[in-house]
Amino acid sequence: MTDGYKGRIGNLIRDARKHKGLTQAQLADLLNTSQSAINRIEQGQQNLSLEMIARVGAALDSSLVDIGAGPTHLRVTGPTTLSGEITVKTSKNAGVALLVGSLLNRGRTTLRKVARIEEVNRIIEVLNSIGVQTRWLNEDNDLEIVPPKELRLDAVDEAAARRTRSVIMFLGPLLHRLDTFELPYAGGCNLGTRTVEPHMSALRPFGLEVKATDGAYHASVNRDIQPGRPIVLTERGDTVTENALMAAALHPGTTVIRNASSNYMVQDLCFYLQKLGVEVEGVGTTTLRVTGREVIDVDVDYAPSEDPIEAMSLLTAAIVTDSEITIKRVPIEFMEIELATLEEMGFNYTLSEEYLALNGKTRLVDINTLHSILHAPLDKIHPLPFPGLNIDNLPFFAAIAAVAQGQTLLHDWVYENRAIYLTELNKLGGNVTLMDPHRVMIEGPTHFSGTEIVCPPALRPAVVVLLAMLASKGTSVLRSTYVIARGYEDLAERLNQLGANITAFRDI
Image 1 (cartoon, helix red, strand yellow):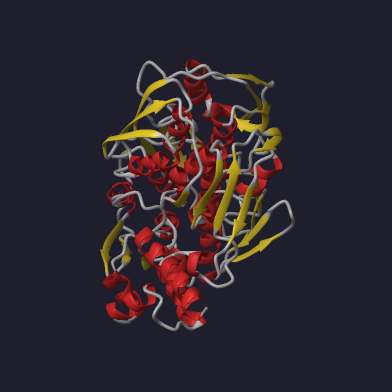
Image 2 (cartoon, one colour):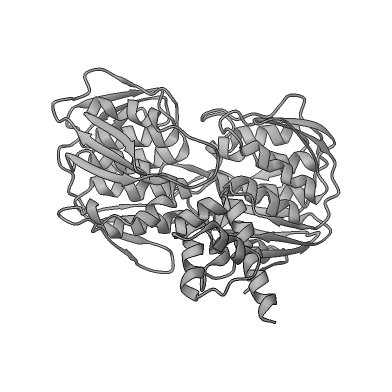
């Protein structure tokens, strides 16, 4: 009996280690132990204390082997037909940007209906560690943020910071607060090396210099350097634009940002800055004119808009299961290209009249999905910066293409290796051919059948696999689903309310 449970724990640790892309020697270094000890643990030949299991879980960034962390696997019984209605929650990426943006304000910020997800939790942990007070106000997920008079960067929660990519966005607001500071390296999705250089080129005009050594960003600010001409972003990235915006917000002159992202989370940040008294012209375009304020000290209340990526996830769930459901509060201006592409593939749906989000700016609709027979599009599907097809929405077309007649080519040119994870659909019976690290060819229609899969380490491909499992005959198991919790709040439970059969469980 003892050997049985130690063996199961060892298998969990081995799977989580491989999932993280670590060798036994690398995990041993993280735990200050020997490779032979890790080998014994994975073979089920080592007694383990609860402390060691918790340390392993922290090292592997995995609740898979973490005590008391709640369910980590999902069991899906299908095929599923969904029915009813579901409401899109507020944007994960806007929520993260606004949490970081609250550092610009010396007054109280109240954010309405914040997405209560792991990525947000990690940012809150980082904020709390440097002296920011946060408080959930009610069951609607309204969040109050009160900054301290002086930030304590020397006390930053390194473990939380390393579990999120978003920590790099702290550079923009912090460069006005401190002459020198350090931030731990960013983590997050395993999508290949995303260079920080675009952030640096956006922030150097404000006097920021960053050296990356010893697992930390070492930042210093030269106050004599001010933006003298328009800042031209070398990459029209969302977080790069947000960093430049936050730096400009506390610069009392006028800063022009060209080649700016006009995506949904950037627009929400712009609307928030306007509430702080910062002048922002050109919202929704690629040229932003920001007239900042030397000090921002106001009590402000802001409601981020709904998440177009969650809306696409729910739309995909309906399409792959050929279900008729109503998806409420869809931010239509960030979904129009996706819907046009789906329409070309034979997708049937109706839209409600438009209405405004709680921020008073973003246009929303309700979508009714209808029975559809899909066929492959004539051209490849590829993302573009807004107003093009959203980069984060591209992976969902893998599951959709799998249930369509014909061959569909997806070109994921932004990320170095995200497309590779889409081949996981083959384990469910899909016909996905990897052409190169950026392109996959998908042949449909697919008759999905259930199997067991370890969750891909990238957020959107992980959800794609889960949604395909809804359409799979029999029982599927998706293991180690922390990455999904990073970007979605109660996704499995909410799908169950539409008629899905998803059970969360743990092995030990």
